[in-house]
Picture 1 (cartoon, rainbow, N blue to C red):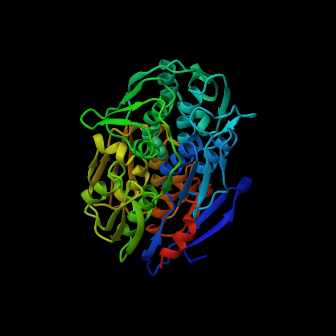
Picture 2: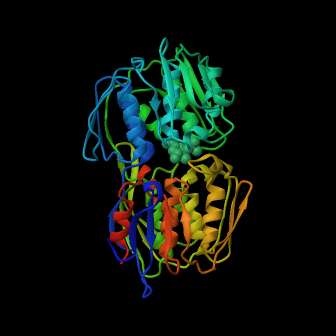
Picture 3: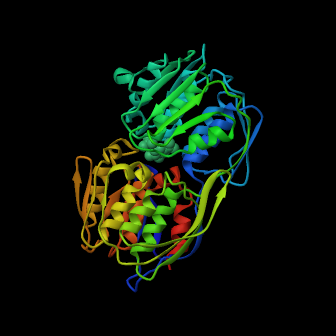
Length: 448
Ligand code: S3P
């Protein structure tokens, strides 16, 4: 354990992470790797489970969320080896052959697991599925997938007008559809495309702005035919393909790299190399935003690995400037807004983040939670209906803050604490394990 961080058990065995930067100053230095991409890990497990033959996955994220996906698909007949980051083997059941599970499927904290899986369940005729999740997931809107699936002929029941889990699904033969999604959501798009796999005909999804395209890339790699129209943000899938197991190599998660990019950018004297980061253009909004803020970030060694762009990222400390973030960039940095708010607290001027109301229905209401918790540390931060306004320059001071069991909040507050004066205590910090099980090890290794 480094001198800056310590962990204690708090009430109900929740973890309290205490961070006290040395008064003589710290810097963030070294060379690190980050855990596998969460979105790609879910999709590799799911497509492996429904394809014929064997899929091998290297670099799988070993966080709680992919573990939920693996458990659900094992319960429906997929043979998934023990999860480890070296190599996971999935023997799929073949398209349309998921078994009716003997018990409730538990998606835990994972919206991606529940929403993508619902597309597959709804399209498996004559089986009954019941899906649930933790407190957070049971309060998140499922109508955004239930409604289009119902338009395709699905039978789904749930609380509050079929919008909240637990949900019961009676699988059906679904019909072709063209769904115009009101939100740019990869979870919605992927749910409908996965449902379309079993449809006799074509399924099209059009979204208002382009969301992450990992499903499109991986579906094509497994053998599906997709027609992508970048001018209208539309994707059309031809149903009933033959899906064959593949070798998937999962790159590091740029959403996890984001914590270190901001740490390196705000802590004076920092110089950090983050290797093997996925830089799919539908995910690199964080790099564009930090560039607008005049952060010093270099991309090195750019390459394509198993169909996904990958690079090493070097970040050095620099004086950040405020910027405005809104419009089409939002879906490309949707998970990075909490840590961008931390960057903005150390930037000169007022940063405005707009069109980000989606943050209210993530693992927590990330607009309210960031405004409240970063505010406790002395940041000048105001919550807007659909965003945040942050004026940098206030010196942050250590405070008692809470993750609200949201992994990205826990880690964002830990990075803010590195540049705050005195001791910060983060309650329920164990939430980080959802997407970044060894976050604390890396924190203690890079801070010198
Ligand atoms: C994800 C999509 C995003 C993101 C989530 C993972 C995915 O959600 O916030 O963490 O893997 O498809 P939306 O696309 O619904 O905004």
